[in-house]
Image (cartoon, rainbow, N blue to C red; front, top):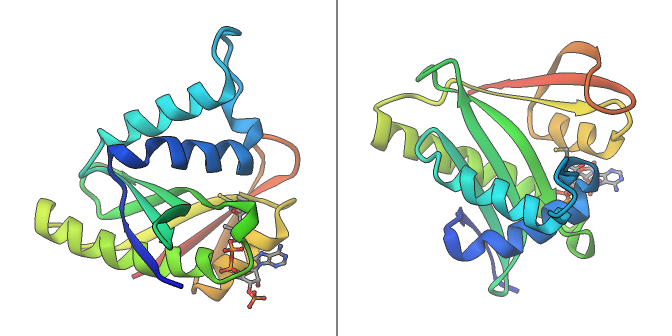
Length: 167
Ligand SMILES: CC(C)(COP(=O)(O)OP(=O)(O)OC[C@H]1O[C@@H](n2cnc3c(N)ncnc32)[C@H](O)[C@@H]1OP(=O)(O)O)[C@@H](O)C(=O)NCCC(=O)NCCS
């Protein structure tokens, strides 16, 4: 078994979009009924790739297949504070340590990339997750994230809980 974490490129868009729709079906509902979820997801991923070096997507590849991804962007100008918007692993590959690998390696990739391209240090990663998604809380806590706030009901049902990791 061969696993690696790397920056995504345009060849990865369809694979990432498929995982995103499986893991976050509620996020890809378009007001334009002509677009299906996969198309909305592909658009979102494609546009996000154009944000480099202010936004990044990393992928987990296992035996040459993309099985997970992390989607990050910088907030506060060139602050060095990144927001982790989505971390997702294909349901068929979950609970094998891939989500943890993604978070650890993505942090290293972001650190090196920011320093090289923007002369900026990675200071902090912040994220939010729903109180109704207990497995993600365990993943974040194991990766050294600290709970900083309960933001109340924001996106869907349940409270949105904010975590941060100071680098
Ligand atoms: C959250 C997610 C990314 C975890 O990915 P993963 O590859 O399964 O994670 P790991 O195998 O590295 O698990 C790390 C730890 O997280 C916790 N965890 C992960 N999945 C869990 C589950 N289904 N139930 C309970 N705990 C779980 C466990 O503490 C686990 O450690 P352990 O296996 O030693 O007990 C994955 O479940 C996922 O894609 N979920 C849907 C999308 C999502 O909710 N993303 C997070 C919000 S953006």
